[in-house]
Image (tube, rainbow, N blue to C red; front, side, top):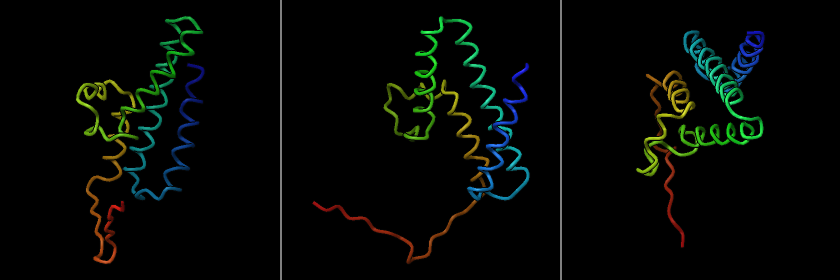
Length: 129
């Protein structure tokens, strides 16, 4: 409980700076949703750290938690699109902490937006052997 103000303020500062520097849509409800998601994710990951720290020895926790977070990040869709995961591991994306947060942020920022390219903006790639 004593750490809660810091767990709220640090991600809030991060979200405020990143949101406007990246140039995401200047709509208050989208910004509020983004801010809420970042703070919620911060509290969730901190809670996972407390859970692991309370239930396993320190040396095991120092190895276990980074492994859990790394696998969770790999399955979230940042690096590999969830549709491109092999079928034997595809189910694991649903237990990733970051999968849901990433999907929520993407939907929040890009839902109802349309992108258009002019004819001269298309790029054709050809393979060279």
